[in-house]
Image (cartoon, rainbow, N blue to C red; front, top):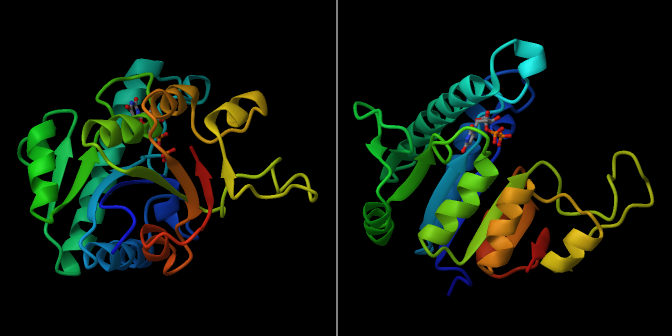
Length: 235
Ligand code: UDP
């Protein structure tokens, strides 16, 4: 029996790039699709939130010369492109999927409807939430936390390129050590950056556990839902 029945998996846009500098790598998408299939095969319900940083990040007003809110909407559209790419990859593995967008674009995605998303999950479909929260000044981490809470996910799994949360940045400080578990409160007092504050606060206030783990390690996702201690658990 898997430990988690319903999960929300948050992937950054950048993770889709693989070794590229921009856009997405089809090998990464098929690998992620296989990882996701391996847990739906266990009967786990999977919802996905994908970032857009590999295509566009709205926050760099100084760099782009584009007003923050305007750029943020562009960033949200980028997440829909990634969502469609993942959708195609997932369906190639034989999975059924639905893409729901927080910004209406009915020709390519359903509008986000909470109860409908839950129904899809119950039917074993992978639900991808695109366009973040639909609001500028938010991130896809916040979208992940929000949707996870809305659909009563057991946990939010934040797939990254590092294998968990460290006492300091391991790339800068060789003495940094990894936490297996850490409380929300400790994250605050020790100033550990797991997600942006809005996303983190949502999880903390609603007692939604977060697991930060290395999504690029084949088999990790399956081990996690089976209860193996991988990455860092924040609770
Ligand atoms: N974004 C937004 N509102 C949201 C989610 C995302 O405005 O609810 C915009 C924001 O500009 C952000 C971009 O979309 O920079 C891409 O999302 P994010 O940076 O979270 O992607 P990731 O870092 O996970 O690739």
